Image: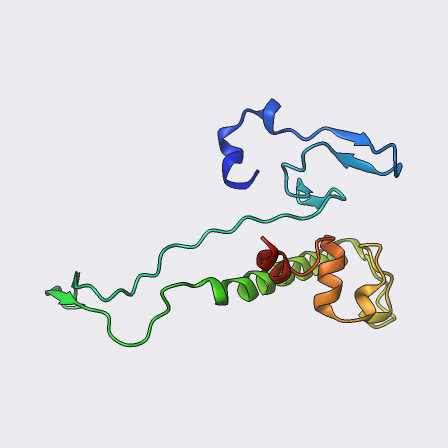
Length: 156
């Protein structure tokens, strides 16, 4: 539940597991944990919620203090983006991909997940997908099971 999670009690937030009768797969009833519990993916879609602060450079005068302690009026000049959304989606996608790969590398180092003899692209894929040989972005999208993040934002 992202930002609302801290407002819930443990009983409300806990995500019960069950066996989906149509597929036989173990699922969670609500996926309130966003697909990750205790730092481990639980098989559900990995869901992230992101918030950005407002753009700080504005055209109105604001008071500030110089390095030498003088109070001065500052007015932003130049071209500044009034909305960060066009850049936000690829930045969030890239950061999520880096985080997933970082954790995969930590798992490999700590648990010898892959034997060291073969190159990484020839290793078995711990996510259970075959896309790891077809490129990083596609692998990330299949691994989290959600399709392109930018596509989902456009559809909403």
